[in-house]
Image 1 (cartoon, one colour):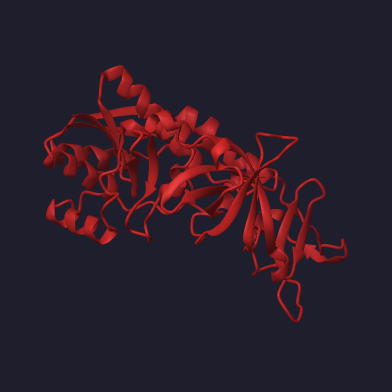
Image 2 (cartoon, rainbow, N blue to C red):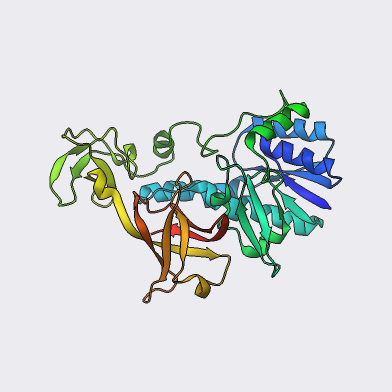
Length: 342
């Protein structure tokens, strides 16, 4: 097969490329220039040279700024918690890769994600969890269009991170690969400093109130807080306060006790389905409300007044669901659907 491999300069994509070469595939690398960082550009080229493959570079900094960075700033400016990695996989990385795949005639696209593609008896394709529970990245891939899946390859889906590192040593990549990026790739400093530099929401003191509206004190600026946060609120009490909600319009921080952070249900929008919606309504699924969430059982219910909104009723309350984050529905280890928490 002729395979286009998304390469970042990190160990995962580099090992993925080498594994595909070992299996006899013809590959070319694709480096997406998302923001100004010449270090990664040179590192990826060194890896491509070592593998003796051609490296294609696509400069999509303008699109990344408009679709990801501006989204990140906008969501925080509206009191939501964005997840740019989820959005980027779909509308930036894979969208660009598929356009290049079709233009240049490749058969498939490979990435270094720890996930798998499952093909059932009806020849339908699904995203499946990677076998390494500590590294599984299926959550971040839930909004990929279903029609893309048959063209995707995840060489690391059946491997643990430890085995990947062993392969990197075997291939003598030491000294070539870039330092692994942590969390959000374009953030070099604290996200609060980034927002201030990029004209995010105004950061000025305001009232801290409880759920009844009682003023408990003053916050130092809403940029310093996120939903579910415990430390740094500055309201002494016998039991700690947690951030329940951030009200940008009134510049108020709404706090509560831990037991008040739990919710029995949430609603999600812009849902990406891998099965017909009608067949999912009224059924129980394992639902993750954030990447590190272990998951809880929930029933999917259609909103009668807004059919595009799906309500998830949990068997056990979930802690601090954050608007702007994503809820992903699983049937065992298969991704069924996912959408943004309203």
